[in-house]
Image (cartoon, rainbow, N blue to C red):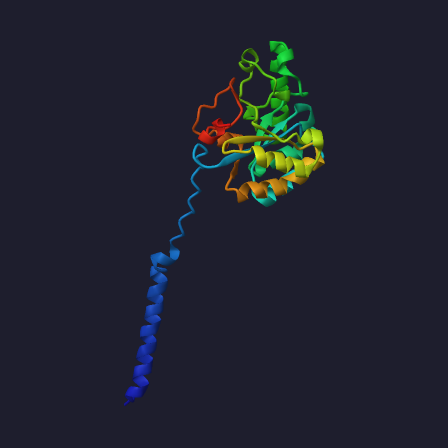
Length: 252
């Protein structure tokens, strides 16, 4: 006759084995297999309420644009690039990178022409050629257009199939080539809803970006693209805009 000390351990082993088999058949508990719900994307910023500002860069792409993209990426700051069509083919990878890193593409005409001096046909060509160059480089057409020199008029604006984006803060970076002055002017003139004008063809302008972005964020500004700045507002082709819809932008 076997002792109870021998029977009990064997019985326990059998029960343990059955438990393991049952567990394998039923699989892990639902709490272990259910995948975590995807993180909800942040709600779009309402720039009629938040202190939004749009950094914009004209005349590129150029030799300093990739450096600028590095700085913007480091600062987690989106921007809008108004590109001269004839320059796009020289830097197609740079334009493609703009899209990949969340920036907005804009047209600045094919060869920086003053549209108020052009015929209807010439304006159409300036727009079309630039569109084709940007789309070839990036797979995407521009969303907006900035008329060179800020020169425009109702008759000419209606010939443009995009909203015309001007600015309310001119850093004059093209004139003084001084990063410190660029930041100083921007910070003195910026207000919620502002569109800041800079140029990525100048090394000094690119050098100003880290300090400028840092100061804007310190003052509570949210950096956005032009498209984001006007989201949910009246932003239509053939009309010109100098600033966003924030109430403070209309003051001064």
